[in-house]
Length: 55
Image 1: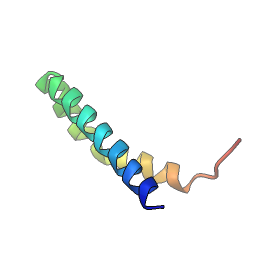
Image 2 (image 1 turned 180 degrees about the horizontal axis):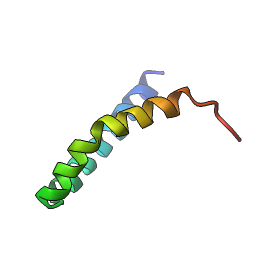
Image 3 (image 1 turned 90 degrees about the vertical axis):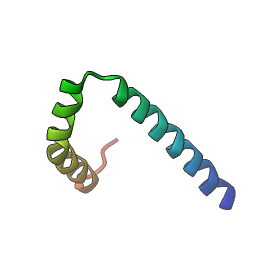
């Protein structure tokens, strides 16, 4: 179980680094638009967590 947690942490850290690097490569206008969209994106994530799983 400890190894699975360490593996998951490593995957999440890699995704976070890739996300941050890609975000930093975007033009300022696009980064600003994404920041403005954060409340809607967070609401979408919360709704997806509450939604029944299909398939």
